[in-house]
Image 1 (cartoon, each protein chain N blue to C red):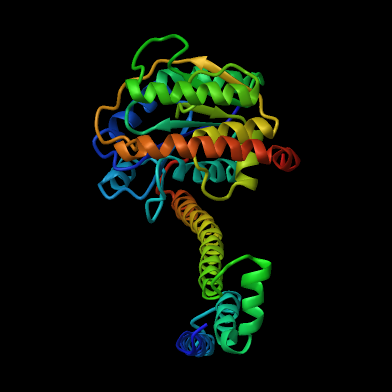
Image 2: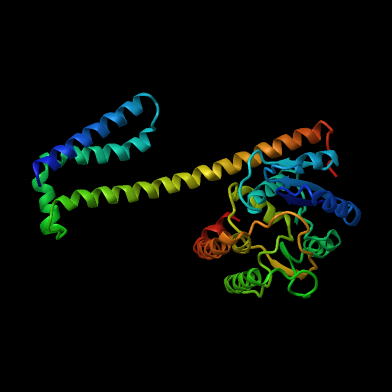
Length: 239
Length: 121
């Protein structure tokens, strides 16, 4: 039987984490769950501990959600998981949808599966400005990987053991954004796949995408895409 | 180049060099960083003595009319190179800090799992 880890990423999600973990307990009971707390200043860590859920807590905040990525790759690699899933702690992702992203990895059809909210066009479709950004990056990333992708910034992802090992061994530092993650995985030889999923809007807390970030993230994203394309030969050798 | 500018460059260069040497002596500055500051201090100290050479660099070689501008260009150039170097260093430090934070957090949780505080599944 495959060992599957769901890494719930959280930063100040005191109000929603309990509901998220209850959803996982009910709808994904066979998966191991670990919360990656990115230095929350509220009671997120204590709440998880009270609920008996393993929580890996950064002593300080290491930036946005990408600050937790390296930690869950390392943890999954050290504990030899076959499938690793990223799951948001803010209640946007549904545990009942996990199987959709896990199955292609378990069946060996893909190494990097993205849950896309734009394929079935059901549920929360994100905000207008953010959608424009996502579409732009989807276009650029699709060009770079030669495969049509729609929701490249989706945080609802599943990785196979090769991808986990690749990142745990070669990227023991900050990963900048989901474009970089996707392209690095692709250039390392991972097979990408998008599957339709349904998402909700966050119920509590604040998104990492502030108004300042609306200017900064697109610029950073483009630099990351160019950077990954420039590094692609080197990346292939590491894999 | 006026005598006042030469004296000023020399004095600033000596002061910088003394400050760098004192920082190295007190282990306040690593040699790799000190090299960059030593180079710029030496350049400033050398201005009065090597003025003809800098004037030659300024005029026939770089086409700069006023030799004093060579000092400004070298100083600004040095600062740009140094800021770039520091940016690379900050990136390296930031990567190492991220790695340490992740490892520390994982170790702590794995210890708690071993102690039976959390169920692994």
